Image 1 (cartoon, rainbow, N blue to C red):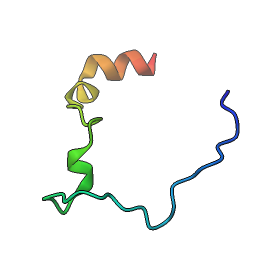
Image 2 (tube, rainbow, N blue to C red):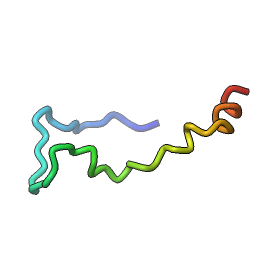
Image 3 (cartoon, helix red, strand yellow):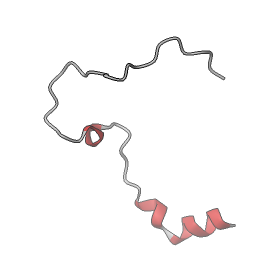
Length: 48
């Protein structure tokens, strides 16, 4: 369990570099293909 977080991001969080996009989530390093979630094997294994 983590301790109390003393610092939280402010509401007007500002990224100090120019980003050539209107969609900041398109630059996320966590974007991965999620095609495996539509597989019938995944559905049946999670339903069991």
